[in-house]
Image (tube, rainbow, N blue to C red):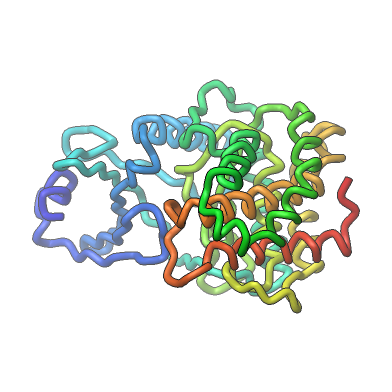
Length: 338
């Protein structure tokens, strides 16, 4: 750590370093130097294979937002003392960004107003990026939104994976197989290529410390990728309207229609006049498919003996799958998916 800090600060011994443990992918630290604060992160290069592309995306997005007078706080990448945006120490890759003061993040949605405001914030974020040349945005994770590939991996796992687990998961597999035609329908649609945040969970919004419904910033731009913008809506529905923790298979009281509708209203607030008719017609279908694909990812990992998602107990990935399926069933009771 001292070697890394020496790349950014002339007197590292004057710094106060505090780990931030909320993130799941990158290692993150708050750096304090007098009255100034910064965010230092070690990028997870096992997931983000090309950190230079992430920096390129962040610079393009940040500069475009500034040029268009985006009203919320913006993530600024700060160069090291050698004027480089990335710092390489041993086999580690680090970057430094600005700290956004008087802000707080939440791990779970607290109210329908908060859900609405977060969705409105991502809608506004996209609105201000609508004129940014999509060819300037490089895929941060290759194949992340390739749903056809996700289905192919699932099908292979069912036939070639742990057959004892296939038997245990037969009910979930039957549900997924019966609803794969909806994925096929989704894949047949040709959506415009737009910027997708790709991780619009509530924890990636900074709220005002004194107002839990006032968004100060949209953060975590690492996953930004070209694709179907509606995937952000689907991901918000998946994580906001689900009232159960992600590995809870209990189907009772697991869905909030109020949160679903709040997210939809907020998401469309700035985008309804920009989205095409095809996009508007497919918004609920996309939400359903995004959740189904997450169920597919969980069960694929379960059938492959838990090689991707971290587990702390037996059958946790199966329970995660069932949780997503329960959410899908609840959505279908209230929303017409076709």
